[in-house]
Image 1: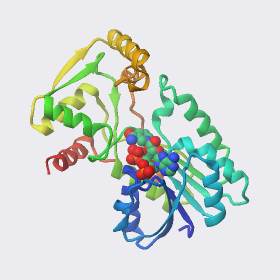
Image 2: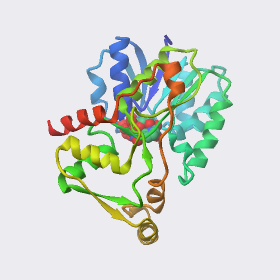
Image 3: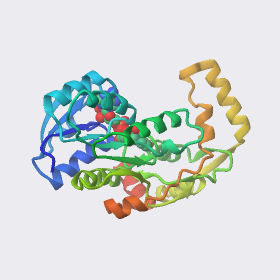
Length: 294
Ligand SMILES: NC(=O)c1ccc[n+]([C@@H]2O[C@H](COP(=O)([O-])OP(=O)(O)OC[C@H]3O[C@@H](n4cnc5c(N)ncnc54)[C@H](OP(=O)(O)O)[C@@H]3O)[C@@H](O)[C@H]2O)c1
């Protein structure tokens, strides 16, 4: 395995789980971790890894230039954000090294609404042109603990209010991926240098939004009533709120429209090359709800 390993996003939800799995699979691995000045390193402290920290900003080429010159990484595991990739590639152009890049992207690249989807596509194209070995891992919505920004909030709301608004039909599909399964896929990609290219990493179950609410209801053992809201009127109202409140608006028109898109993606390629076998949503949510109760 690569001697000079550089990891970003290690203090985040997925990054912490990845580091835990790395410590378990390859104890005492040496790695440099890019952190921001206020990153909370506490979850990494007790791990059986030999970590050194560099403070910087992954969105700035100057950070990457310094890191690459000082550490000469053989592998960069970039979990923080695919949006930093242009800065990383710009810095790499100034150096003779071509480290292997493992980048966590997003299936948001497939969205027809997402204002960033076009940007993601451009960044992916830049990454595809990189002359060194690279592997792009695209998770769907990530869930799995109180640190997830998605399903945990949904579960808490359903637990408290026994209902949830459903914009439109609620029949569009979701396939959330558990953060531990994603972390394991990142580890496998690291351990298999021959693996290159892009992989969609979706969860073990495909559900509609209404089915998701029914599943949460069953696991909470509480009723959760879907409150149907008309799509067009909701989108217009959200657009008005955005005009009035700008960034302070609690919901954006595009978010509502995106809820109508199917977000289920096969992960056969990841299963074949990374042995990716994600857990079922019921199993993942059951553990998350047990954590919530504890
Ligand atoms: N969450 C989802 O549902 C979802 C879905 C699809 C794709 N993704 C992608 O999956 C990856 C992991 O997501 P996550 O939810 O686990 O992330 P997260 O919990 O939000 O953590 C992000 C990590 O990146 C670091 N970071 C952010 N901006 C940075 C910068 N400018 N410079 C250096 N470090 C920076 C954060 O540092 P601090 O500790 O300082 O904050 C943190 O360690 C991300 O690339 C995300 O875009 C997420």
